Structure formats: structure tokens, C-alpha cells
Length: 146
Image (tube, rainbow, N blue to C red; front, side, top):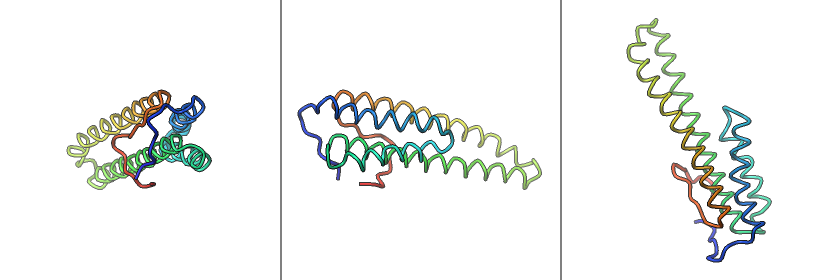
């Protein structure tokens, strides 16, 4: 299922590539705003394709970052769809639906903020683990690419 990472510490260059995939995905995602997951997945996917035959350690981290960023993109899309649905419900009821949609909208904003914070923290933790030569599996990840 996952590429096996050896018990010995990987060489410094491989640890740097593995940490770089997480940091690169994070930086590109921050630079591209709303398409954060897709841009991060692009970085991770390119590094995975380039390094998969060279280093199982780097490939495992790139695959984790790829799946995590795809998952974050899908979660972001779900939040946007729910937000549009809430806005549509408010407009269709000529504003009377705001009694229901406003509290739900606030919950949706809080959930989006929690998702963004989890994405940021998990990416930093993954980079630190990679730098230390350890394996890392992101939480909240849908394993689409294996």
C-alpha cells in the first residue's frame, strides 16, 4: 500500500527533497489562494514523478503530500458548494431564510478556518518529520493515488 521506508536514516539530500515536497506544496498553495489543494498537489505530483525511482523515502512523502493536497482541494470545493447553497437559500427566500442560513454560514466559516489551520499545521509537521528522516501520514486524507 505505501512505499516502505527503511529503518536507517535517509541521506541528507533525500531528507531535504522529502521536506521540500511538503514545503513546496505549502508555499505554492499559499501563493495561489483558492486553488490551494490543486497547486500543492501539482508540486507533490511532479516531485513524485521525478523522484519515485530514485528514492522510496522521497516518493512516500511526495505521495502523502499529493493525496493530502488533493483531499484539501476536495474539502475546499465542498465548502464552496455549501456556501453557494446557503447563499442561494437566502436569496430564494427573499432574505427570510437568513434566520436559518446565517447560523449555518457561521458554522461553515468556522469549519473552513479549522480546515485551513489543520492544513497549515499538518504540512509543517510533515516537513519536520521528513527533515528528521521519519515517515508521516497526514490525517484527514483520502488516499486516491497509491
